[in-house]
Length: 329
Image (cartoon, rainbow, N blue to C red; front, top):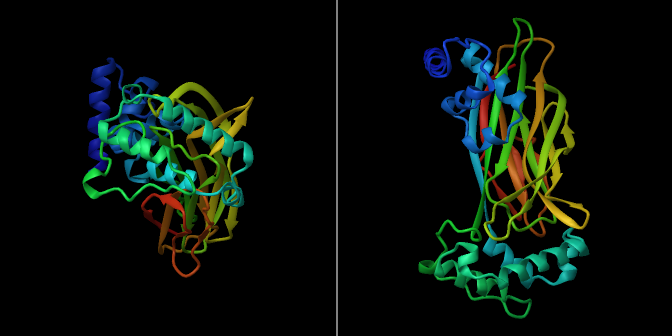
């Protein structure tokens, strides 16, 4: 079915773009659409490097059975963060890993929010009221629990931030050796408020597979307080640190923010990659699982499960659902 879809897609794209058939080498004008039609999240596609887009599109057209994807997301509650941040003593915030400069910057941003009207923030009356109550929280004055009927459900700039997350697995195995390129890509459509910790992406696998060629490419930007979105300024080609549990898994870790010339740039999008391989093919189905963990104040660590294949995520994280694929070692 995928092969037939890819052939039809090639014909349709070719007729629509020109008289030339791009059988295996799509140009930049149609490569994104090939990925989206294959099932990629459009927001994630927009964040990928052009080389990645063209490579994936070529793979889809040449051998669609060799590439698999799975989409997910992470939603973080910004109202909850505001309340938690403002009601937590500064000493406890610093003990959780947020430094004094970052704490001051968060306070400055929250004061800026407090001064804005609901029209400037593009939010509903209910969301604005809930926001103002949260912004007036103190360690001695926590807001009352929000009644169910007053739960913020609008799509305004403040209540929640959502990140799109995609797993891509490309089978490059030979007759004698299993080889799989694995990548996780993500993009925050609206910026999160919290930025004093480190986010993590965990990959876990069975079958005692080895891994190599770990890489990461992260982009940071500045949050637009009026829309919850992003300004055009970017810091590109930033990297993550890696922790490997040999033959079982890998954790990529990266700061939620970077301080440049006194401004805090939040992580906006990125891709992390590894290659799984074994020197001899066994022909046994194995599991690959990945998850994104977005840290909140006081977040504990994450680890690779040793009892079963999976990523163990501690407390104080907003996390994606587990994305998994079967691979053959």
